[in-house]
Image (tube, rainbow, N blue to C red; front, top):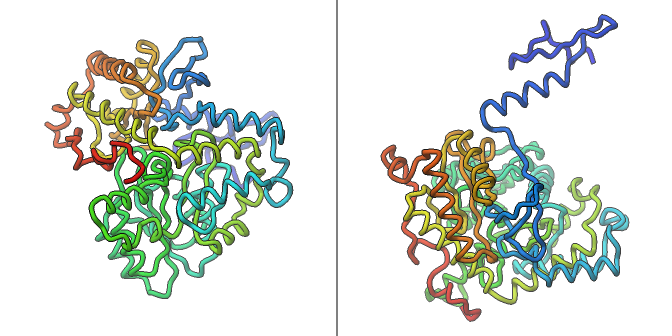
Length: 472
């Protein structure tokens, strides 16, 4: 313990970390350190408060607070409402009756089943890949492949977008290989960095297809071009796009292929879904349950399966949940109604907020980031929505977003209706008035664009696609 002692009991952060004991020895004061560190987060407004909100299984997006009040959830990632789908719930109930509550161990000990194998085949098929691997969380589905491949590939260099999710950041960090961060969606910067790496060196480009806190979209076709030209593996996180985009819900790459075909591209053009080497996504957002997965060529998947410790040493997902996930994926592959409803609800909310002068960071996706720009005011806005208007939207502060860009991240869903939308817009307008928050004109006077003109040309989903036919 002696290596933990600090001279005079003061750390570089100014915390008093030494306590005198009855024996006369001085030891590190862990509790005081934790308390003071947390107090600093509370003072700067970045402390995270959890609200106890119980979903109503048959009434999403309605939920109940711990006081028994009914509220409407507007910050869930259950974009398609599948967490409340009778189809999914019935599959899980049936699985519980047949297989019990748990898996019984990790995949290689006791936790493998026909349901796990069938779901992985379903997910591989969804992305037109030969193989896939199921993980217990979306976080691990990003972290484990990047860590394993970055560790195993000799002298590997991973090039990571500056806005990538923490799961990707920590996977790269744990790999202890060379990492190069390029500015968000900066193709020129990315190519410059790729060109400086010898052709013989293994390289991985890691990006998200849709970035969840701002809604920006990766230029996937151009990144595919760079990956192929410079001999890099392309790793794409489709977490916020899978289920919500594409003809069968496979994500942004499939959606862009669909758009290309509708615009007259040749049938034999090389599809984006085939040019992406590794897809990683979640099963806890649009598919409504829990978990994540990667899909790729079989040797790459098997390499991660065989070497990723976070996969090897983790108890497997229960077969009942796996059965429910597969039912959800199959349902979303077979129809487009939910995806279309999500997009139409998003468009309605964005346009209504624009009319009220409420600032939205511009994007072409279903993400609705409402800018406030101050952590304390963001928390006040969230609290006021919950207590006064029975609307639940969690505050998003640092480190999830940068200082000065604090926001409310609103999520429409296939379960929200026009009444929910009107109540939301009215409530936000009231909060903006009561707290004196900046509106569109205020931000524009400071030189920041915080609205968008939502036309068919500025959306990922075209008017024709929102017509909802499966023929494409």
